[in-house]
Length: 123
Ligand SMILES: [Zn+2]
Image (cartoon, rainbow, N blue to C red):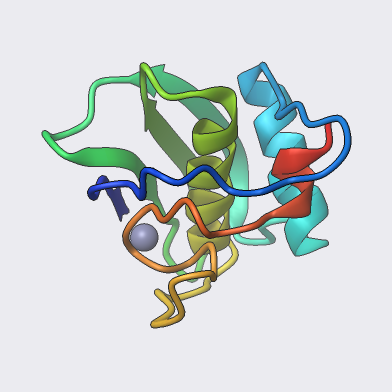
């Protein structure tokens, strides 16, 4: 799960052409590229835009150890870059990653504009 927080007003300084993936499948591909792994315990993977609880930007269901379907719901209305960061975070949960205490790590539980995921910056 990733929670919305007050985003820093200063934009992240980036050089060169910048365009995040504009489609949800593109964001999933970016996440797979970032993690360099696929979720082995997922029998199926589904990612959709939909309703999430207030303040929650993304949610992922995890299979048990025996495996099962993995589902991800991403809140609507985010920029492509932020949506990509949320997908990378939830995909990390599919891989078994826990939350990080490092604000720049995509597994930090609050969305932070300082998080840099190259795959979300250069598509
Ligand atoms: Zn999370």
